[in-house]
Image (tube, rainbow, N blue to C red):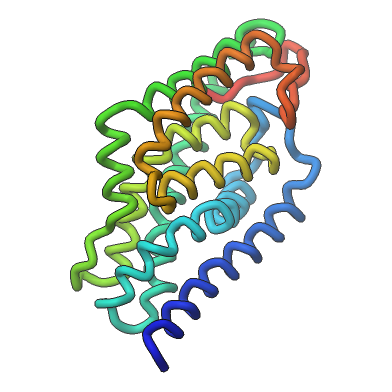
Length: 244
């Protein structure tokens, strides 16, 4: 089998797995979007849907890195790379879950949507926009786009590349939490932005435009959240809590 055919099969494997993950995500999350502060429910359910979400959102943009590593790795390098890559994003998801539970252990009535909720959500989105312009973001995105293809093994390579990509896209995922982590609409938007930054030839330069867009979106959330397409405003009751 030619190298081109092998690369095509590996690419189809990743995109096919992502398509299946999207189908499962849509099926399980339809109607669950409650906007900012959506309850993350039990850890077991959350972890299962989080891994599925990450497979849907991240595997297509991980394809170039996986193919590069597969040139020198043995065994089933594409699958093993994906496992390591998703493990890094699973760690991010567990950290977000822990933060959510920690915040909710305090008196968070001031985070209700008719009080400080819009300001906190807007601030998180603006902060993510500022992060897009930092040297840390640029270095992480560069490493995420150009993984090391040594012979350390596909699992380790996937984990290390995943960690670089987590540092690169952590702000964008925080935006998803701020807008509603169960929102299929915003999940797709964030996935497209991550793909563009990681895969397109001018992806490194796109961060500047993403930064401007995020700052504008954060201000929009504070000023007129009801006019934002695809955005679900939370229940305005005092019990509504906001993810930080």
